[in-house]
Length: 205
Image (cartoon, rainbow, N blue to C red):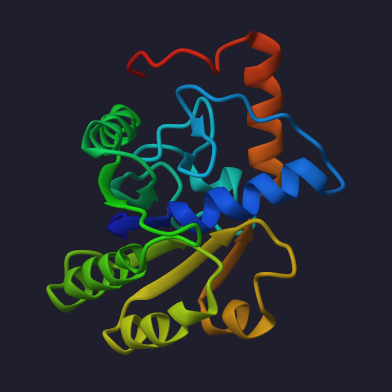
């Protein structure tokens, strides 16, 4: 069977907020260092990880359906506080990590509704066009439940990857075809990067 085509859709606003709380005050404390992979309240990703080509069995060891394949495209959605140069700078840093970025101005502390709308639009439009077989959603917001159900109605598989904590409801986990807990891979890769002192550079991957 030929490798299935997949796309990744990251709610970076949700991921960054939840991960900061988890590593600041959770059972495993890691001091996330701002740099290439992290800017507080704006974006976060995993060091040493090319999200377009990595073997996903690193996250879901019991499911190798995506192993040794690549994402057709990986989207990252977030918002930033600051002026237009600040927004453009975050956008470029996400491009350096090989994401297709959607970066919106944040006009209030709790974030931008544009992130949810843009992620839903992209994930649905690509499903309707048959551009992927599997959608990998990195999010924990229960508001995405209708999106997941509609994408599945289009005959697509939906994988949900996130930090397995109370914010990921059982209803959300049961709605998808696969849920993968990302805590270990996040923790391992960040610890390694901090030990090696490689988190500060803004240079391209």
